[in-house]
Length: 410
Ligand code: ASP
Ligand code: MG
Image (cartoon, rainbow, N blue to C red; front, side, top):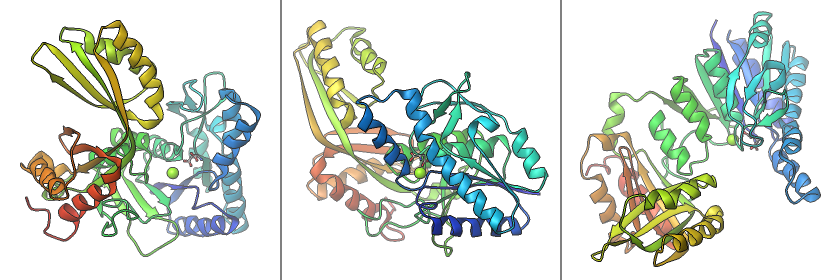
């Protein structure tokens, strides 16, 4: 009998009516002869509400206790769904992370899964039950509750699908799939039928919010096919996320993303000698700040300027560190810009087609948009522009590469 994992996000279980609708969907899948493991998120807004409660009592809520608190959101929705399924006549068992042993490291709030044990799930399934699992939570070696990071119910679902060797992991959400761009910004955005793990990873990493990044990494590593679908609307097949196939290469660009929360730091007049880049970026990495793009331009007098981007939230901390380092290494100075956006085009077709970058730059030039930084990978080209041009750049690129059928030929 096929085993599938379904995951329902916060809006999908956001009210009792929604939970009833989800129960109907689960019952339907069960009726078609499949074994079902259902992972749920907390009801929409609940996790934020819990975090706010903690913040009202402490400026820096103690991480272990915060996890005890915020993990309750998923416990509630798991229990409610199981109660509803019972009421519909479907034997159901709900499980929390400690009952299964979803074992993680001890990093509260950002824990990583070490192992998942599922004999209890297998037994419950064998006894004819639907299994409901609370997403987002784990336990560490001491048995203390941990959480896996915001949005990480997706990760719970993929981890279970991997361990249980499920035939598919269906992610139900409030949109009917992965789109070529954010439809709020690009009215011509359309749903993708298929997208490769690599493309999805780039899209998730670059701000497409439909799937949590680490869940896509895990799905790729364990070859778990994902389907992203709406729990509100039945008339769409959703988006399939899986191995790349040959036909995918025919499409040059699969998606365009915009990240408006970037900032840029420059250290100028750095002496040109071995070890200085390590000296600069070591402490930044040590502080857990993710550096994205880095450019170094050497000048004639043997000194160089180094410019890099960090998320705007990290700007203040990064600047403090950088100022100290700049003094220590005798650099000329530091400056920053906090209003920058990163616009990216993504597509596996770039591996085998030349000229995509040139075309991208032409499109931006035609809109009079200045490019401040450029970074490329095999299947992605990103540019940094002033925030005020971010949406315009995204629309122009989307409509040129993806707006109409056939428009993507270089
Ligand atoms: N409830 C958690 C959050 O809001 C996990 C999730 O929804 O995936 O981040
Ligand atoms: Mg989510």
